[in-house]
Amino acid sequence: MNDKTENTLSSDATEVRAQKLKLLREQIGEVYPAHFHRTMTNAELIAKYENLEPDVETQDVVTVAGRVYSSRNSGMFMDIHDAGGKIQIFSHKDTTPEEARALLPMIDIGDIIGVTGIVRRTKRGELTINAQTITMLTKSLLPMPEKWHGLSDIELRYRKRHLDIMTNEDSKLRFQQRSKILSGIRRFMENDGFMEVETPMLHSVYGGATAEPFKTHHNTLKLDMYLRIAPELFLKRTLVSGLTDKVFEINRNFRNEGVSTRHNPEFTMMECYWAYADYEDIMDLVERLFESLALSIHGATEFPFGDKTMSFKGPFKRVPMPDAVKEATGIDFLAIKTDEEARAAAKAAGFAVEKDWTWGECLAFIFEEKVESTLIQPSHVTHFPKDISPFAKEVPGEPRLVERFETYCNAWELGNAFSELNDPEEQRRRMVEQLEQAHARGEKEKQLDEEFLDAIDQGMPPAGGLGIGVDRLIMLLTNAPSIRDVILFPARRSKAD
Image (cartoon, rainbow, N blue to C red):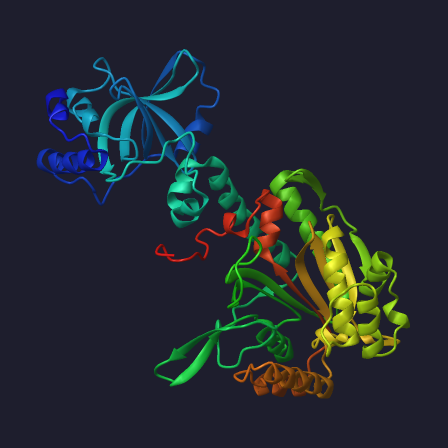
């Protein structure tokens, strides 16, 4: 493997790599060895020799490995990267045996190599290994995208995430931060006394939220099943069991609905239930959790998002939904008595509402139209209409409203929480009513979850419940404009489309 060999290779980049692979197999045998042991990662090497002075060579021999990102002077200088950082490799006739240097013409950008050699720092301050041996660990058959610009095609970035992360430090950091945020949520919940459980992903009856499910079929059981849209009903059954008074789960939900910058068909939720607590206790929990995550990622409760500065320092603003709508539109829903009056008031104010909408549906619609977009800093919107909240307890003295809140930031809903309904007769009445409405809309497969209702008949303690959309929370904390930027392999159309 020398300059003459290299000059006989094809001019096509992919074909060149295939030809080099063939030559490597002929001359060194195994090009994808099963065993190679490095003595330290690049990050460990950088940390250990952080104080090594320029133009100093140690006698320390180390073994590292990584992907080749750059090659200069015919391979005399190479930069190799692993998950933790970059190290420069120096191969010269004065320090590197001919057998190792003979491999250099066969190494392309994107190949993965192992290197053993002596650690030094160059006069320019670059931490470097003087190569003594070089081992080909993986021959890459495809060229890497141009390093400094990465993938400019956004859809290609999502389709080939491995290349996006390989060439985009911001993307790589974002997914490292995602892992840290998920660990932070789990650690916070456990430290707060919550027990993590796992509930089924396949449901024979779908429920716990209003959404279109994904349907599948279990061959052995001869049973149609649904990918879960929420773990709520199983987590509440866990409370009934007495296994724990504080339960949580971090896992995927699936909803067969639209795709947007804030919606993906599968998404990560953290859902929890806390016996003998109410929605105000949950508000405090959310504020403490968000503050701890901001401190973990940014070292401060304030952080940038786009052209804004967000603050996760509690307490957050708290406003009842009727008050927020009244302030934005002048419509006082608490003074309106009937559904007809609510629809008339909405139409008079210029809102297009459906002819069968209830008082609560009109209130919620106007809130979404006029208030949501104004909620930039973290805010808890409380006192939702009972019409759209079948699992929450009524507000004392105002039976049309329930003890529910949603947390908003950047005009996005991040969390949804209730003082959970535990009256079994009222729970059945509301679920039957919800089922009838679903059937009227044509959702004929919707069923009553009798196993859940049986558990509630056994007696569930009063509790506060919460669901947090983890992906949106990560978007905020990592300054990501789209949910697909924080999901490692997001849903996308087929290549043919």
